[in-house]
Image 1: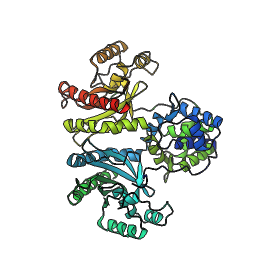
Image 2: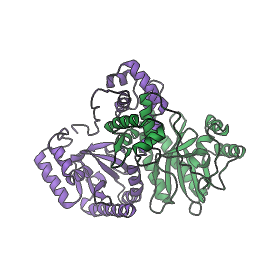
Image 3: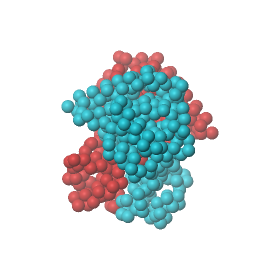
Image 4: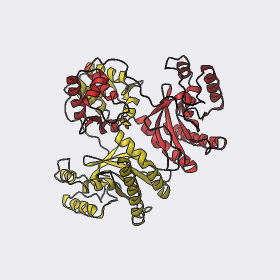
Length: 260
Length: 260
């Protein structure tokens, strides 16, 4: 690994309104569990008294909790996050298919949705025998080096152009196999679109491969992907691919029926 | 069912500061997937122009998304919610134990944490053969009629007193077996404390039973519970109890080792 695909986005700019300042404080936690007032003031560029006052409001709301030495994100945010109902409904509908895949592979099973040019994991099943990998629920990984992400890029021209134009920060190398040439990535994504499923051959983590299949809503739009990820020495992608595709087709059929 | 244990809390009062008003708008979505500007203004008591302006800021932040006809909660909230790191870490550590329980029961397996006098589900595994039940990830159910919730109440005197004093709204009947007498609930919780695990005998949903065992952190504090829930005709609680307790003990031991 030469970079951290979990790196968080920076806030877009200095906060303007009082509401935007409060929201910036929430964003400022990044991947950190706990921060002190001074850290939060430094990260947001807000004066300490302002930071203190806004934090008190966020604590009263429940989105931030006070600890012995600082602040952390709170349960209200967890609960609100789970009310993003299209994710929640998708997750509930997908769970039996994910469980089937887990039971037949004992490997990491993901449900992911597109998030700009990235892939956002909304569920992950893993057992004690599964390959330890980077993905985490609620976390994103770059689309161009993951099976689900390449599928999302391949099946959406706007997303692919946005990435290949370099507007989103370009292609960073994570392993020797990461595709960092725009021309090669374009070819790879064209192949992906042609075959209709995504493959990752150690492009995000050394020795870790994955296969992803698309989940469509009743209009045919790709709204999610299901993938299985594990060590290359454990996964036989040729045998695994039809299994993952069947699961994704089952979920697609069910979503179509429900939407009618 | 004579009531809805999923009923959402009302906002604490009329919003004061600009930040609090914005946050009230987030809360106002409740369990609804999509609301129009007029609905949100009505629910929060904010003037429509104010509502419109604050929504624009929440949309810019990503916590709210515009749809064709209104607004819905957005991906930024989902992502922030998953950064409530103690839940996320607990969830990741628990997953192998939850998977073991699912595989041996094929029933609903929960990981829950206390949330005031309620129980908040932070993970739920279920397959196509599992009993369809009310619980959902990110959702709460009243503590006094659930196996995890009764365990949390039984093991925390403050929580139990808060509930029994009626300060939190009292005891609502959901089934003929819901314990709505404070005296009987006190006895039931005392028994629960004595035996060290929680039992629900159709107290939240007719014919649905559960057993819950406590998960403790390195200091011995009960921070979560693991439960299995399903139709009474399918679950043999006497045989299931040691299985659930063993899983919870395994997770407790692992959390203790990690914290040292």
